[in-house]
Image 1 (tube, rainbow, N blue to C red):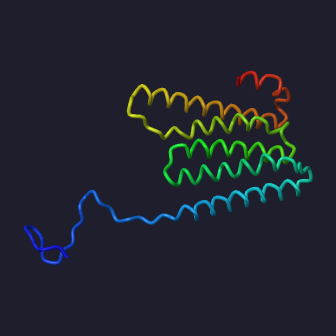
Image 2 (image 1 turned 45 degrees about the horizontal axis):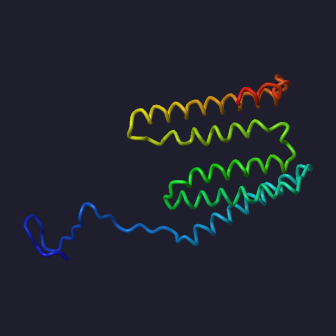
Image 3 (image 1 turned 90 degrees about the vertical axis):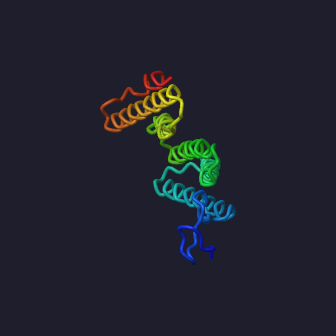
Length: 177
């Protein structure tokens, strides 16, 4: 209870405007266990799906598991409010995706994903709002170009899958470089 004063009634409790009620976050150990659990479940799911598909490449686990663990690390860093969490998570997701593609033995068909995913990772930072207008314009330009690269990659992937563009492998990597 706060003592009565001007403008206050007896028994009224006030808080300062700059204080907030304490929020509870899971402990660091809990976050690591949950992230590691999701990483292992993702690895098990991809491994099971690749074995069911019939073209299972067991050695791709050496790429898949580290990618899942790096993604989990990025998730924990992001949840803790650490700046590099987004970058670490995106790099881990790309490594995981490459491991999954290799595990299915589908690199010949799905290799444009190795270009689409980094483009999406760059475009994902579009929400970042620098205070400097020149930096903001530069960042938004790069993010929009990344979206164009991802859209072009997805279009070429779709055209190649539909059989309408069979010579994609000849020029697409050189265009992206």
